[in-house]
Length: 161
Image 1 (cartoon, rainbow, N blue to C red):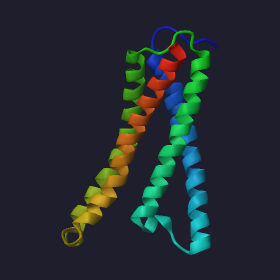
Image 2 (image 1 turned 120 degrees about the vertical axis):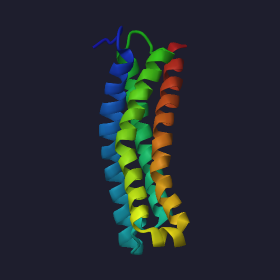
Image 3 (image 1 turned 30 degrees about the vertical axis):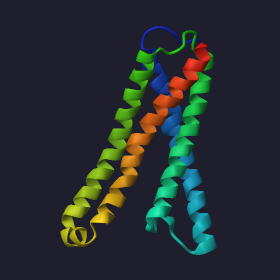
Image 4 (image 1 turned 45 degrees about the vertical axis):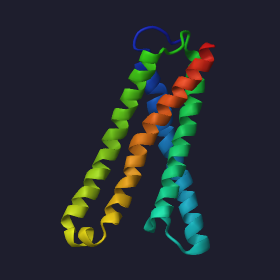
């Protein structure tokens, strides 16, 4: 199958963004994070998500798994493309991926803000808790699209050379 021409950025988003980063990446995230969580809980009796550093570890593992799926998706996409993606197509694909990440992550941030608003006395006594809770979705919101763009740009610049 040879892909070229119009809407190449959209095709890249569907192939790498949807099929690999979203579907395969989040499946890998669920499998790896559940395995890590169950292993730590069984071995140490600690639930990772009860602590910020545990949740941060799982977030980093998730971003890494999705990043590896982006790398794999780009490699396969490069094989099928007759013309390499230019910067405009990479930007279009990244914007679409960023919008999808926003759709998933912004409700999480809204839920955290809503929870903080409903528990004002706790929020007032422990303002750092809200910042820590909000930091994890913000990390996903910023690092996933940035990684998607940088990896795609780097791989397609190499493929073009």
